[in-house]
Length: 283
Image (cartoon, rainbow, N blue to C red):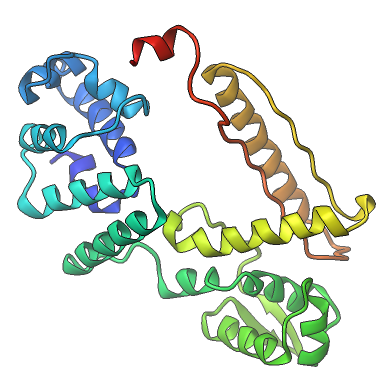
């Protein structure tokens, strides 16, 4: 059984699925190649799927049909793959949300839960992670009014009380000897589906804008740089940023003198279409 196919319903990115499928098939069968698959699927270009995987081309309904037949999808697998492509290629938020709702429904059919209720709920409100850190890192004595005022921007007392209640129910906080402690030191959102994080990310972006505009420079950090570079250099930049993120997380995890809760974002994105010879070849 092909592992990638077996875990198709676990994918949130069809390009990643295709990449894993091709890599697995190459290891399993010496004759397998992009040219081999292209011939089987009926594509005129032997590099078509490779260009799709690399994000150079999008899939069309006809190409989805060809890939589905070549991979011998079951009906539900084919439907899921079609919706997954719609989700990844959607240009409008409404389209992505509609596709994501279909993905959720299909996963329910096969009794597959991508994330637990605890993980999903934790990222529903931007202040849940903040309250969690404040409850364990400060000398909070259970006064929800004080807790609410410690959050920036300030939340209501009821919101603070409800947040602590939910964190306790989810097992992300527990009370020991009159103090609140974390059941696990840090949670990572990397495995949470993008649509589940869209609202909280949007809210954090808004808070970041507010911090840049209103907070003194010695209390916040912001750096904006416009660069022209190759895909190779971009990948290098991502590696450096990810390594820096991991080092900072490790440092924070061992920090015994916590003074504030911070939100850290590392964002790099294109501000132009591809230029040069490669762009000409894709026209």
